Length: 321
Image (tube, rainbow, N blue to C red; front, side, top):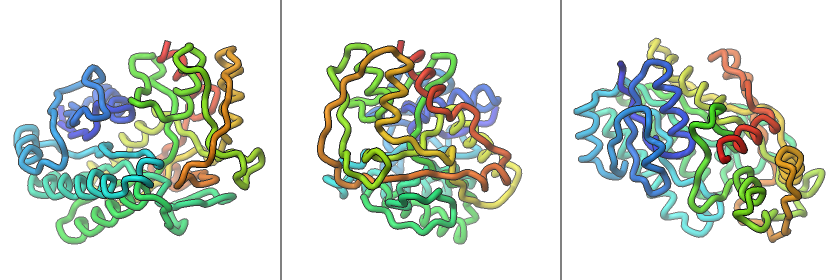
């Protein structure tokens, strides 16, 4: 089987990607420092513990496994934290990714699939974002991801590195079989927090801000099912293996849900009142981010299959139980 190096493969999205790679006939080699990942999520291939800031460790892993490609998920991704500790985000995202990219080039591994974000666009209220939307990130998370995209393009020109960049925003749901779930410590994602309240693990959910310029005053986001997301990553990998050039794809449903809408849908599905407490806005939160995917449909043949809010909540609830 062809080896694929999956950074962050012990995390939420990375572990789902590893399962998809295994089912598709690849051997996913997880590289993770386990700061935010989980050792028991590494079930589908070899595990190499390490930090992508460690160039020597990366060189060793590339030499032993000789991967045909890298899928790069490892990153810090909390907006509030990025506002308070920007240096940590530039180091852990940009500097670490540069170290990884340089190691891949040294090893002759010139296929690179990168997990970027729609946060590179900043606040785009009322606009369905596509690949040509102007970028204006409003926090260190989005800015560091945009910078990594620039590095990939520079290394493409200089060394022939071919990259697929996926920009998406709120990933939700879980493996439909229930084998994998969404886990963060601490948990910061809306849907699993709602389900933790329903399970009695929390008393309430906080809604940060009720005065945004949206129909109900709460933030609007485009949610994409993790299974749909990793399907796109497989298509991106095959695109590169077929010898096609670098490309950028936005991945989304093209439809946004407000925080209040997600809360109401979760209440309906789990049959729990899920108490809400209103809180102040968080710095760095955009009012609305909705992401289209027409380019991915036309070029990759990708369209989301499970990215409907009820399905995402039901899959997450099944996995959590």
